[in-house]
Image (cartoon, rainbow, N blue to C red; front, top):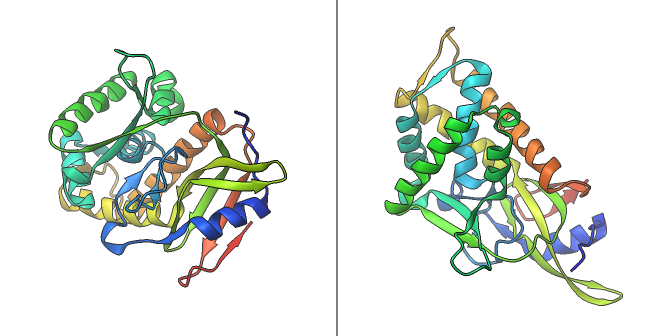
Length: 256
């Protein structure tokens, strides 16, 4: 099945029919940017590379790139606190069609393991994360298994208090075509990073070396997140158009 690279007019149709209001009670729950999530009620609007696995890796990378110390165990407990408990920590794996073969990990994390240096982490740290995931899963963390081919035809950067479902049946001259989009929710990512920074400092999970402060820490998270997004996008979304969608509170939006 061939992908359709989505035009701005097609993205407009998709968003018009796939937008949904962010639930303030669930705004810090996450999903990956992957387009294979089903359009289901309760799908987290906050889309971030690797979901919470990506968040853990991002903090580890930021600590090395910018020179602060992080207590790994406190990072995990603090993230759980921010999202409302271990049961709300989310990650995904890919389904293997071959019987007896284990599901493969998330594409973002897979790329990180293949080239840890590009993401600012070490092989030991990716292994540490993988071991932690097993423990979190045993404690009730949510693993979603995604199936099927990648059919993403665009990358959508979202701002505002609305989310976008990633799957759509697009009307074309040749009939309906199933399409998907990669989604990154900039506003919710930024908001959760502010909450995480505050909680990490409150829980003494971070040790600064040169008198830095919370705003500085937040900026390191923003910069590292952007690096991780771009690293994965150039591997998994190469050649796809990128659109920015800015929502008003009433659900109106502008695309560029």
